[in-house]
Length: 366
Ligand SMILES: Cc1cc2nc3c(=O)[nH]c(=O)nc-3n(C[C@H](O)[C@H](O)[C@H](O)COP(=O)(O)OP(=O)(O)OC[C@H]3O[C@@H](n4cnc5c(N)ncnc54)[C@H](O)[C@@H]3O)c2cc1C
View (cartoon, rainbow, N blue to C red):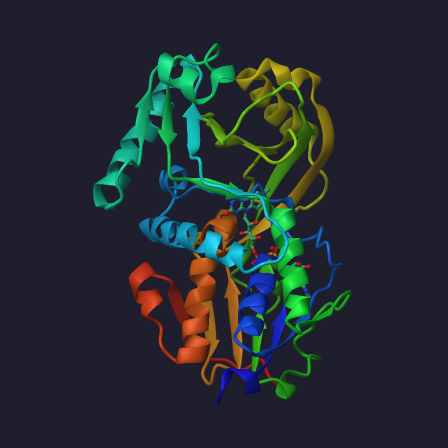
């Protein structure tokens, strides 16, 4: 079967659904996407996310496979963005880690974990310890608050909303048919009219993938014209890593909480206080910032917090899920792996990057 004769349905138009639709349409497949929401996708985890691409910073609390998927994807993102017509904010100017004096022992733990990761990575210039003078060179506005820091120069970030919009536009231009306000119920879905049905509904797939769970994350978006930070800053914090990700035009995303709950109701007062106070301790200029919005969503996660591709025997039905807090970090690796399976009938990336592939033994399709 040639690519162009494949007729593919994608369920969900969040991060995975849009990226996959674009990639498949780009190689000539006929693609239809069904999403329960609207083109802006405010109900997706992708809409709320900070979209940092930080494999090494994440390595402190995740598996080696995520780090490898992250580095693979860091190389892939600029190539993907080059194929889109809209300009998407992307930068790879590193992550800066800082901590307050009382969190020095947590910082030491962070350094120890980093050292373990860098031992098995072949990249150079992975991590640099900074003194006050180095901090002054890198982020002058932070050098008054902090005596030292860690710089991870290869890390990046992108603008999630610009990306979602650009993927939608390019996909539509390539012929992808988007059906909005279409909440898929697999029992009713006309799966037999497609060669492949690929389920990218995130936590919305839980009724068919019961082992999924949601991990609530809250963020606050602010406008801070007095603050000049040029790269994502992570503050080592006793509860969860707090970050400030600068986007275009003095907009900063402050996040994110990590709560074992599937509650996606608005941000709590406690979380808002914690996030905003932490930001204020990083830079007092945030005191005069304007709060543009706050948002909460659940990260779709499996028990081990690792992603999984689940294949029906004849590839007619596929679930891709469990990207947890790493969706932007690893999506290109996951999508390339899936494309290998779908279009080339091989999966070298799955072995190279340790992406879990599971054969489904049950049948959803009527
Ligand atoms: C607060 C927060 C911060 C984050 N920060 C980062 C970060 O800095 N870096 C990073 O790499 N990752 C980050 N993430 C994680 C990232 O956002 C997710 O891993 C990623 O969005 C998962 O992609 P997905 O396509 O599987 O799910 P989603 O993006 O959630 O998309 C699922 C889509 O399916 C649709 N859907 C659901 N049910 C149905 C149904 N029945 N029928 C039709 N459509 C349906 C939804 O409307 C939605 O559009 C963050 C997440 C959160 C919540």
